[in-house]
Image (cartoon, rainbow, N blue to C red):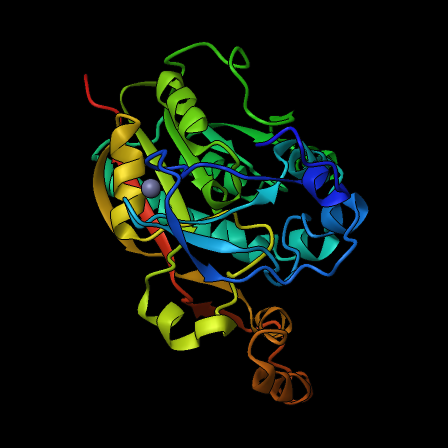
Length: 316
Ligand SMILES: [Zn+2]
């Protein structure tokens, strides 16, 4: 950062080094499309939980490690403020589908780990309206969540009677080595400081504990096929991982990767169509047909590059 920048834009955005290797040497792979005179309020509107705001930021690819990331990016404090005030009734209305998906994948985690859930402590970071906590509880875990959106956290506590801490995960929130399983479902790609957060997560896990991440894979075949229409090029996504870069990020934070697989999500067909419309306009033609023949609530399992990584903290 230079001290000579005085424009309004420079108070909203910051130049960063590569979040994976620390280099400052990159190629631009997507140009910024922000309108002139963008305000803090415009920016903050882009950061609601499931917002369908298309990517306006410049995306770069590190010449040293191939990490793809937003740079310059909106300032971290603006991002966190925006998440704190996010409200999203449409998102939580789909929680039944999410609980189903989380149960399926937490069962896979237990199978990979080889130990039962029975009373073990589970933490979900960025737990939104608490769907993952409901799934974890039904499998026998003792679940806890952390969520920056006060509205989402309240919804989860009120609707499911689950334990959710307000805010973002910070040192001192929980004792060291106090969890057996920690998850971040579609959260890591939103985080301004992945290294700092992963170090903190490792300290909260017991030796031998499991850490699970899902992320939208910028190198997946579907991503390449859809090009600019890939639905995860979003203003809220700061980091665009691929298998090599996510593996390196986890390994450098002290985790051993045990599995990296496609993550299939199940949501109602009508909802998926509504969310896909801005990116794949022909899909919009399907909406009236699906409504007319009563298929709006039909569960649809789909894959758009989301990837599931199971890793563990060595020891015990
Ligand atoms: Zn790099």
